Length: 253
Image (tube, rainbow, N blue to C red; front, side):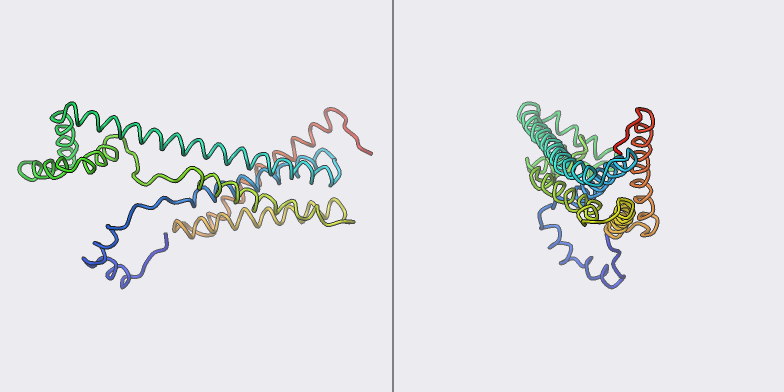
C-alpha cells in the first residue's frame, strides 16, 4: 500500500475518522488474483512460443499453440481459483456453524476459550473478565472472534466468481501480448520471436513493478525478480523444445 504523509496519517487517525473507517464493511482484495493471472498467462504463452521456436516449428504453429494454451489454461486457472476460494468460504461457513453449535451447547466452555485466548495476550483480572463479558454478550462478535483467533480465518473472503473473472481476464490480457508479433504477416520468424521476447520481458517487469507499487516493495527489485522468474520458465521451455528436436531428429524443412 502507498505510504501516507505524516499529515495524512494524523488526519486519518482522528477519533471521528477512525470511527467512520471501522464502520465500513471489510473489503476483499483481488490484486493477488490479477498478479497471479497476469504472470501465469505471460509465462504460459511465451513458454509455448519458446518451445515451438526451440523445436524449429514455424510461426503459425507457435501462434496456434499459444492461442490454444492461452484460452484453455486461462479457463483452467480461473476455475481452479474459483473452486479454491469457494472451498475456503465453505470451510469458513462450516466453522461458523460449528462455533454457533458449540456456543448453544457448551457456552461455558466457549467462554473459557475466549478467556484463555485473551489471557495469552496478557490481559488479567477484572480487565480480562470485562473483555470476556463484552465479547460473549454478542453472539456474532463471539463467533467472529473465535474464527479469527482460534482458526486464523479472515472475515473478508473474496467472492469466488470475482476472483475467477479477475484471474481469467488478467491471464488473457497479459498472456496475449507475447503472441501479438506472430499476427504480423510476412515477417521473419526470428524477428517475431525477438519482438515477442521483448514484449514478454516488458510484461514481466511491469507486473513486478505494479505489484511493488501496490504493496510498497522496492520497485526495481520486484520488477527484476518477476522478470527472472518468467525468463527462467521461458528458457526451460526453449531448451526442452530444442533438446526434443535434437533427440528425435524433428525436421520440418
